[in-house]
Image (cartoon, rainbow, N blue to C red; front, side):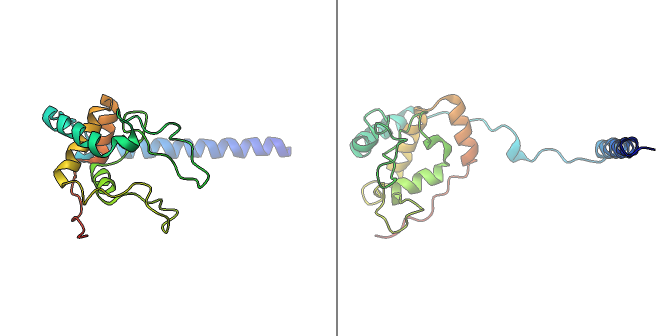
Length: 174
């Protein structure tokens, strides 16, 4: 046999053998007892927003956050463009930003403790801490207000990220 003919012969055998293995594996997987999906992967209904908390949160936001993040939570102009030191301006808290990508616990901790660039741990915090100005409940209602600015899809995504596990760490003593 010529080399190419031999190559095609053995390649065909190898492909046939792989196909037989794949079919056999598929049959054995179907016949085994596959456990059902864990509860965490099943759809979780997104809780309704509390209109009273949203209104209180809007007032707390206006008094404490709007100066940097905008009166309508629209963020600073060009918030995606870093300055000369590679620091980003304050982001929006509506669907155009990334707030909805984060779990409630992280949002709570950023508001309470402030935020420093993790790549520049010695630099000043880009967002100051508000734990000495706002109560835990104030922070929670601000987060509720943020949620009122998000689309249904964004709220569902954020709820999945939060996974109904809102347990902020102990407030540090100042």
